Amino acid sequence: MALFLTLMIILGLCLISTLAELQRLEHSPNADGSLSFLVVGDWGRKGAHNQSEVAHQMGRVGSKLNINFVISTGDNFYEEGLKGVEDTAFEESFTKIYTDKSLQKQWYSVLGNHDYMGDAEAELSSNLTLKDTRWLCLRSYIVNAKIAEFFFIDTTPFADEYFTIDPSEDQVFDWRGVLPRKNYTSNLLKDVESALRASAAKWKIVIGHHPIRSFGTHGDTQELVEQLLPILQANNVDMYMNGHDHCLMRISSPVSPIQFLTSGAGSEAWICDAVLNRDGVKFHYPGQGFISVEMTQTHAKVVFYDVFGKVLHSWSASKKLLHSSWVSNLLLSCNLTIWLLLLLVDSSNPQPGVLKLLLKSMGL
Ligand SMILES: *[C@@H]1O[C@H](CO)[C@@H](O)[C@H](O)[C@H]1NC(C)=O
Ligand SMILES: *[C@@H]1O[C@H](CO)[C@@H](O)[C@H](O)[C@H]1NC(C)=O
Ligand SMILES: *[C@@H]1O[C@H](CO)[C@@H](O)[C@H](O)[C@H]1NC(C)=O
Ligand SMILES: *[C@@H]1O[C@H](CO)[C@@H](O)[C@H](O)[C@H]1NC(C)=O
Image 1 (cartoon, protein in one colour):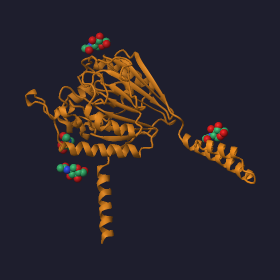
Image 2 (spheres, rainbow, N blue to C red; image 1 turned 60 degrees about the vertical axis):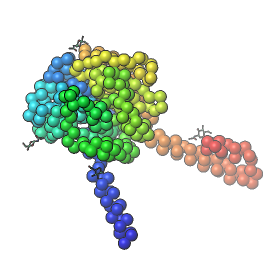
Image 3 (cartoon, protein in one colour; image 1 turned 90 degrees about the vertical axis):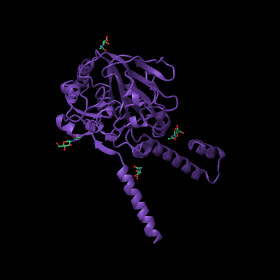
Image 4 (cartoon, rainbow, N blue to C red; image 1 turned 45 degrees about the vertical axis):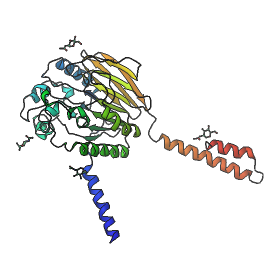
């Protein structure tokens, strides 16, 4: 009976955990395993505030790099998301703006706080994909592209400010599917943590609308610094990409290799108070633009562009080849075998020097 109960509980836990898992999508990389994509955020203004100019340059760079897809960091439709699936802002701000041939690829989007001010479920609806097959927006999900895994996270429900807003400010959020909020965020964190822990991808990239670190007008999102960042650092995440602050920025971390990349300059741009080389700030730009990323198993290159397509900044990272730890383990065990053989040969007349060398080669 006890055994039966235990089995039922384990089965129940398994069911809960599979139900809670983040949705997974697959995106094949190029034949040689490489991958390239663009990242843009905070854009939908029917072409205004240089949105069309940025879109034009994205097309040019997208074609040069032969990109695989585009990532949107949210705030897809201003000022208040979409009114419904029939809202023509969808065509006016998306379909009719990103027209270049190279941008006719899959777009992977998250919701921003402005998207939550409209009919959030309309943006998530597959009805939009029927209108424009490039469109895909889910709350939180994973895209597996073999050499890299992308973890898209719905960050708006984490920020206290939207839940304590003064009703006289006339900001109404569509929290359908989010409440109770603490349940939503704690379940999401658990799912992200277990998915990151299970990931064997060479590169792990996390995307959310709100910055973790930023020196733009909005600045750091303290809730994410406290709740999300420790999970990303414990699981060797390479990059966190966000929008929300309407500028371009790269910030590094003193305690982990993670790079904080802000790409929230798809239309209206803002000032940014960053000071180079202070608090990890490596680059900042207060105008419009976007980011491109190219990756192979061993290298990643991130480039920031302005509204004229001019390269403002670029940053590269490299990793050892896959299996390098496996190779060094093999070498180590070869070394150990040699030393053991030497010890055996010497066993009639043990020499302390050999023992010392053996211990040294084991790193002791
Ligand atoms: C468009 O970009 C140019 C170049 O950065 C800038 O001078 C201009 O103010 C921008 N226009 C708007 C409406 O933001
Ligand atoms: C999507 O389209 C279907 C069929 O026309 C409709 O029943 C459904 O309500 C639509 N979804 C939304 C979110 O409007
Ligand atoms: C909170 O989350 C748990 C675990 O996913 C779920 O079983 C429970 O029904 C949720 N509670 C509410 C009130 O939605
Ligand atoms: C094996 O031994 C050589 C020579 O002592 C040393 O240089 C090398 O680092 C060792 N390799 C490993 C994997 O321990």
